[in-house]
Each structure stands twice: as structure tokens, then as C-alpha cells.
Length: 534
Image (tube, rainbow, N blue to C red; front, side, top):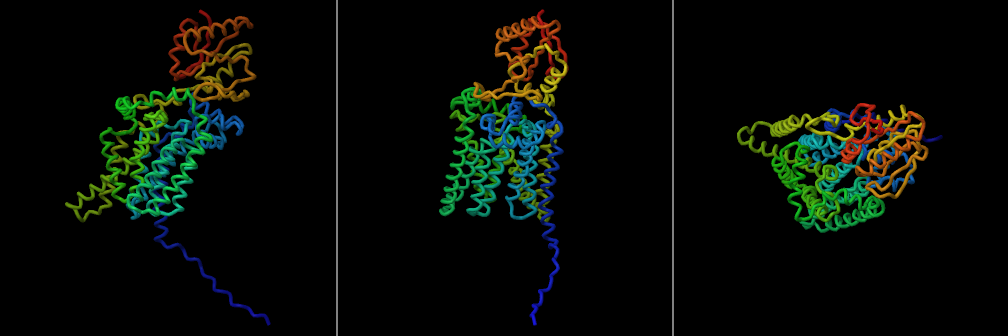
């Protein structure tokens, strides 16, 4: 007889405790709300449908070449950034990548703020304040172009959030996550090299000051490993984008020590409209933000934030990295906004302490939330013209991509030119023209002198002419040669001119064209013209 064991009783699965469900919902709702606010504040459709301007066009063109050419075509862009662009199915939708990193910056700012308090409601309030502050910064509306600057900001905020997370519950595993994030960040953002030193320096100094020697050793090892990763990526890939032309391009943002005061005054004045508040008020909020981090027991991110401007100034004076340019210093401005958001929380803490003296029964959470709401609402009201802008807001901001139509110009010429017509393309318009000539094969040419380091030719288009001209006499010589060649072709041959009007060389072209008959054939900000002898 076979013995049969009694089967254990089947236990019905119990539903998750209501408290746990409420906690999960409470943690999720703020993130969903911030994502929704991102789509409210940003005019996503305008940014995704705008045509690529000159400095975006070569980035977009890089996705058309084989993956084996990526080390060349990535040029000054981080190689990971260029690779991510290749994952976007439609070349017209590449701006989803910078927009995605901008959204990541907001979420990372929330997570950093959320970790500043152990009590859930208070942590969520701080997270929402830091997330909204980063989202509402006017400078965020200036960086929808196809460059890595939103990734710079996202990586910087993520590393600061990871430093806060690690300091809150120290472990080797969390340090390893920080180091891994540095390695990944270097593939996406050159400024990771700057931020990682400050973040790991903050972690190291925070434990060394407290004489926690075991953690000091662990932080030192983590810093050395991260430094090795940074060096490997930089010297293995990123350094290829360096050139004398690039150094000359950024020369105005590489001040000497004696030029530093004047440089600060000039650039802070230029940047102030993008900051959203007067500089003195921001300075107070920054100070309060750093003090709040220290007061809440998060010395590591506080030290990292203090080290960042020191590193930026040192690299600028050393001629290594541009100082206070709106693009290359975008990550610094966003981090400043994040710290100012923490400063708003510091003001709310002060308000709570003051109200307690007169109205002790009033819940402190209500006072803190009301204070933050009033300050953020005021900030948003003052800067309302920056939100949902298509980039062409007179008196506020004019983005190149909002006032260029090189794609329309290129396609108009392709549709209307005759079989014997010639097409002259100005140098600054070349990348845009070749990008939107999407039916024509392109040939990569590298290396070449210039900030990009490569160019391309159109092997099947002998009707397209790119003059090697930079001043009025050389442009006129080139146009005379083209017009003479057109005169030898069948009657009715026309000479089309496609150029970009947003480039600093445009006044030179206008002066050169003064001696020719110029017929405008399209409308828009960058019209196509047909030129002929007077």
C-alpha cells in the first residue's frame, strides 16, 4: 500500500496591506505629476517638428554613416550620445533624446529631494519642490537642441542624487553603483569628468572629517576606480574631439586670472535672464540650500556642490573647459537651480519655526507646503513667458532651430531646379543642405580642419557648388566663376543660392551680394534666392 502524504493546505494569497498600497501610490503620484508637468511646460510638438540648424545638422548627419565611422562622426559629442541618436527610428525625431534627458533631470532632482527626509510626506514635499524648481528654470527652455547639454545636466543631478543615497545608507554596493554611474556618464557627457571628482570628493571628505577611516578607504578606492574609468573613456575616445579650431572657438570663455572678474560680470549679466530670478536672491537661496544640506545631515552633496564652482573656475582659467557659456555650463546652471530649490525648502523650515511661536497648533507640514507653493508660484508667474515657447519669443528667447528653414529651402530647390541649373551652398549651410538632400548619396571626408573635424561630399551632384570663401572678395570671385560657368550652359540656366541666415558670416554674404541681381524665390526666415549679373 502506497503511503500518501497529506498535501499542505492551500493558503489564499492575502492582498497587500492597505497601508503599503497607500504608500506605493503616495510615492508614485508625485513622479507622475512631474512627468505631466514636463509636458505642460514644454511645447514638445514644436521642438520635434523644428528643422535642424547648422550645429545640429552635422550631429543628425552622423547617424547616416555606418557604425564603424562612429568614432569619427561623433566629433566633439560624447560617443554614447551619438550612439543613442542611432536608436531613434526617424531622423526627424532625434530631439527626443535631449528632451528625454531633460525629463530625467527633473525626476533625478525629485529623487534627490525625496531622500533628504526620512519622513515620507516631508520627503515627497522636498522632492516635488526640487523637481519643480529644475523644471521651471528658464534655461531649460534654451536647450532643446540636438546636443549633449541636457545629458550633462542629467548626469550631474543623478550623481548628486546617488551621493545623497549612498551617504544615507553607506555600503560598498552603493559606492559601486556610483562608480558604475560615472563610467556610464562619461559615455554620455564630457562634464562627468568634472562632476564625478566633486561628488566622490564630497563622499570622501564627508567621512574623513567624521574620522570614519574604513569608509574613507572605501571612498578612496571608489574614487581611484572612477578616475581610471574617466581617464579610459576620455583618452580612449573623447580626446579625439579636441582640436586647435575648437580651442580657438571657445577662447572667449577661457579667461586668465586677471580677466576673471570682468568675465564673471559679463557672463552673469548675459545669463541672468535664463536664471529666472535676480542674482542676489539666487545667491541667498544657494547659501540656504547648502546650509540645508548640511543641517539635514547630507554633507557629501553639500561639499560636492561647493567643489563644483571651484573646479569649473580652475578648468576655465587653465584653458581646459569653457567657463559660464550658456551651453557648456548648462549643467552648472541646472545644479544651481537644484540647490536653490533646496534653499526654498530651507526657507520653509524657517517659516515653520517662526509660525510655531505664534500659532503652535498649526500643522508644520501645512506651513512648509504653503511657503513652498507661494515661492514656486511666484517664480512661475514671473517667468511665464518662457514656458511652452516654440523658441521664437521676441524679447525672451530666440532659438536657432525656431528661425531656420534650411530643410524647406533645400527641398524647394530640389523640386524646382532645372536639369542644367547650378546650386551654390554657403559653408555654414552645407551640413543642413546635405542632411535634407536625403535622396543623394554622401561621402565622409576626414580629417579636415575645423571644429567638427570631418565633412562630406555629394559624389553624384556635380551641380552643387560649395565655395571655399570666407570674406567678401573671395565670395565674389567664387560667384563670378559660377555665373561664368552657368553662361556656358543652355539658355535659361539659373544659379540658386542656399545659405543660413543665422550664422555670423551672414553680413559678409550680404555685402558680397550687393553687386549682383538677387531674386528671392521663397519666403520664410531663410529664403532661397536666384542670383545673376547686374
